[in-house]
Length: 115
Image (cartoon, rainbow, N blue to C red; front, side, top):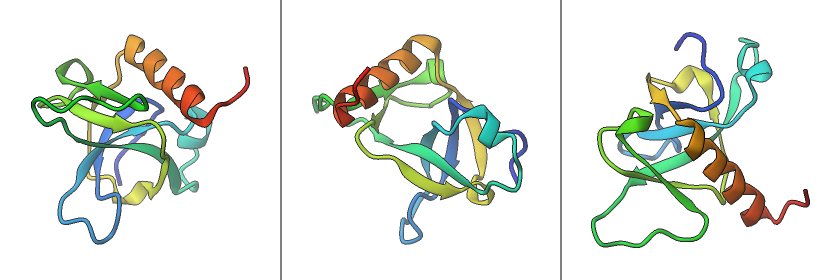
């Protein structure tokens, strides 16, 4: 099991059982839930490699080396996935503070959450 997962960690995990490869994901579950080892379900944003010349959608954020990734990666803020923490194979890094704010704004806007 991967030790001490925290909110905003960039991890590597197989999101769906039928996925061929593992993908990066951003943990959005709060630290209090992450700290409780018997809580196996964590909410994450799913990442895919950003293709050159392809524009991002309004609900997407691009993370890169500053966040622990090898290449620019697009994260969809319009869909949260639930993963089993025991399936995490590695922690790659942490989302930089400015990108955390971008992700938060995208989630609020996409889900049209009142503030």
